[in-house]
Image (cartoon, rainbow, N blue to C red; front, side, top):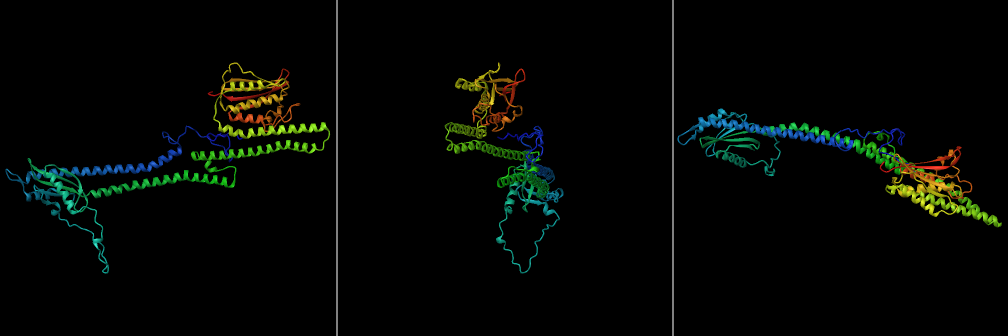
Length: 544
């Protein structure tokens, strides 16, 4: 009862439910070429990944920078340590045949060669004892910021209540340094990071002082600017983090504005339709959007508009049914009221015939109305299948031929040559109902003993079924009216109540549901005189 609506590809010339023309979407246009998915999905993916990529790329760059700086510091300290160890070996080695290191001379040389402001240098003898330290020789005073002064009446802080420090203890720091020196005394240079005396991480190298094969001592150089390097790296990472957070917030707000808020508006509009019992939903500003939200809005508007049209069709159908049933009921009531007052047997017989005809008409109306009301459900329930149209029509025509009585209108099936196999996609039951309704209509307008001819031909991917009779034809002004519900124009002599006016309407509705058309024409003779009517059903052939 309602026409099918294509909401996926609306006609660009046709208006939507609010009277605006639809904008046809271009299937091949993609805002971000090369990425799969929908436009809105690609936008969400790119925006969410952008902030993460910025943060990750910044972290990777700074990690590489940190690693490179530490390695460069180790290389620099190793070069300096090897140079100092070589000089001490050449200038501060005394004694033959057992070489020893002159501690005083080595201390003077270490003071000359080291740079206390850049790194800390230590000298250990062959027993691992500390001989010299650049901090002893540097003329510097260590400065520390004092804590703020407290009032006299303030209670002294109980240090016993403080939590234990997480930094390594002095003994642990000394053990790490001794392990490093022990490794160097075995003749192997050591380079890496460890904790310094003040709890700071330092880059340290220990180079053995070798004289031939003997190890006379160890030179240890350490740089304590690692924490400063890391602090600068963290400060450099802050802008990347801020940018990533800003991009993430902006993308989240954009997604919320583009997706979450429109969906919420559509939900509220649907609630208003439900609560106010409205017929359609309308969101003009969202329907103009050229993305998936716009498609969803237009689909919802088209869906509610189709439902509204179906409700109007149901209301009109109910009104037509009430009008058509009221006529035979009025006739029945009048006949029943008059029957008791009539004493003439002939008159009573005529009234009884009227009652019988009205009952038959009501029965025919109820049957056709039931078929029409179930039609939409049947068409939506069954799945289309390949139907051999030639076999279907031959079976229907065979039933009419087998049940025909003397004097009845005969039905002849005359398919065109070359139409041995004509297959269409559809539902066999409704398609057979079209053919039966057309044949019944043609028989009702055919003279007694006449013939109804059913034809079938395939032309350029279309199956054409014709049903022709030899009746009075159809008035030209009624060639379309006859397909309206409850329209009937009975020929003289036709049985009263034999037509409900729903057969042709149901046939056209089924044809439209299968993508076909149904029309009526008049057959003209040699002298342009109407010699009958012909109904033409056109259906698309499967696979064409």
